[in-house]
Image (cartoon, rainbow, N blue to C red; front, side, top):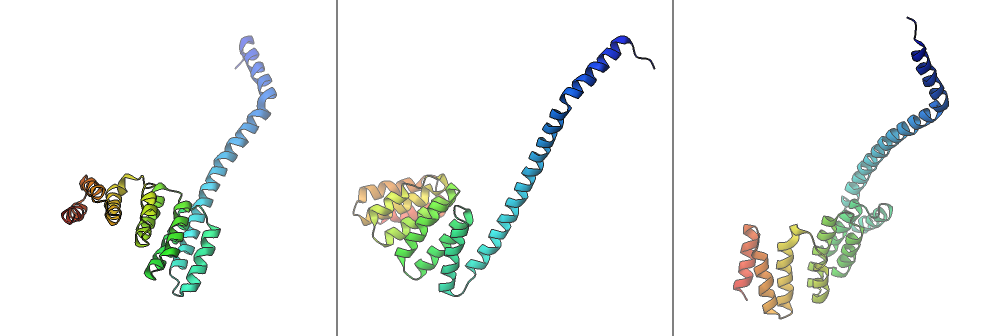
Length: 202
């Protein structure tokens, strides 16, 4: 099949354009492919790292020897700071301390957990437990300040109940009553029962 002069001119223009630009096109293609494979590699690496952290976490919290467990927790946190697993293992450390009535150590671990938590819900969990520990220590103002940092809506009712308990311990019945009434809003049946019992006891 013979080409017309116009078709030959178009073909020559395409060839000329290709000769001028093919290196750039190949470079763009290589960069694009590198990006795709680089992203997949990063995703696979993150998944593998998460599985590894999970396995180490399970091993650390399963330790029966208390001193060894604490040492392993400290090492784990140092190696995996600012991760969810670091926050979780610090919550475990705090629980062990509370079981021994060592509220000072529990408070320190919970402060660390809140600072390491990458997700607001983990930070809120740590701060709720920290406020409970501070309440046990009779650090009422500290506990209220900690509760003020809890912004997650899912903690609204437990937060209001604990706030009321602390206010009552401080002798502020009016503020406690307002907090218990706040806890009745959107509460579960159990939370409503707990709040009502506290209101009845005022």
